[in-house]
Amino acid sequence: MEALQLKQVVKQYGEKTAVNGISLKVEQGEIYGLLGANGAGKTTTMRMVLGLIYPDEGSILYNGKPYSKELQHLMGYLPEERGLYPKVKVSDQIIYLAQLRGMSASEADKSLKYWLERFDVPEYYNKKIEELSKGNQQKMGFVAAVVHKPKILILDEAFSGLDPVNVELLKDTVREMRDLGTSILFSTHRMEHVEELCRNITILDRSNTVVQGDIREIKKGYPREEVVLRTAGEVNGLAELAGVTGVQRQERGYVLTINDLGAAQRILQLAVAQGEVEHFEIKEPTLNQIFIRAVGESNE
Ligand SMILES: Nc1ncnc2c1ncn2[C@@H]1O[C@H](COP(=O)(O)OP(=O)(O)OP(=O)(O)O)[C@@H](O)[C@H]1O
Image 1 (cartoon, helix red, strand yellow):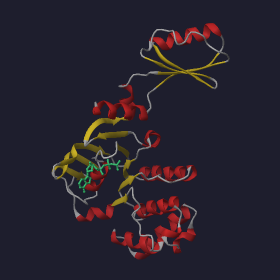
Image 2 (cartoon, rainbow, N blue to C red):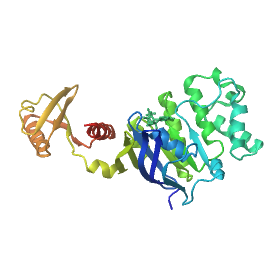
Image 3 (cartoon, rainbow, N blue to C red):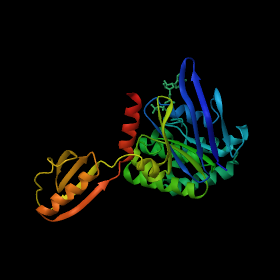
Image 4 (cartoon, rainbow, N blue to C red):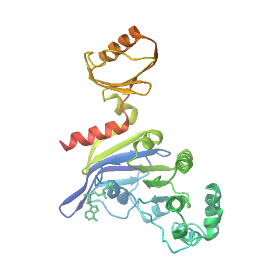
């Protein structure tokens, strides 16, 4: 059974429909990507899952059951805007938050110390949030979201403001939580993170679902329109080939856009005829390209 299921969920703010009938399923131990343009309805959806606001229509089920207060103990949330108080010590507020979610003070203290050690910052225990850099505040936000070992974790731009080393550290942690059975709703504008972490996604645009499903299956539905070619020397005549719509010269070769797959074969034949081909690849569309296309199309 799905850990989390949304069925035709609608949320209105007065005349404005913020979420227009979203349906999705997140399995236990899955990282699910919730994507969308600005104002598409992601935060509204996450806040409904958390029970902070209520749907006007449709239903949200947690292991097949509707929302109840006890679920608060099982949910963790890293909001996009930092949710921690700047003037309060890390330990005071994270232990307090964990207690609100059903942990004893000593369990919470132990768990916090584990996470601070894990992130190699045990000295933050006694620091105020405002004394930390932006990225380290983000890490403490993450600790606050996971300290009570949630079963459903909602991460909104979890890696924003982090340097590449910390992004990898948090990614590993997110994967580990998934492997331990936590269901994760992952929202971001960084498509490369979604490609790495998620299997299934929903893309929202202006409150509607415009793309949904397994990323690999979604990609199959989009044409492969980019060819990467690396050769020892120059290749003449690429732009004149039928089906080639763009040729970009790069440091060590070419990136070409094509409008039919036959053009890829013509490119290869031409390149081979003129010299040594070091690399040839017909690229799948990236999630970034799919996003831009899907959101662009729905705006037309
Ligand atoms: N409390 C509110 N009152 C009125 N309208 C709201 C409220 N909260 C959100 N909205 C509107 O609902 C729509 C969806 O907003 P939401 O914050 O869910 O988008 P989002 O996908 O999270 O966007 P972003 O990527 O910019 O964070 C927007 O048009 C927004 O203006």
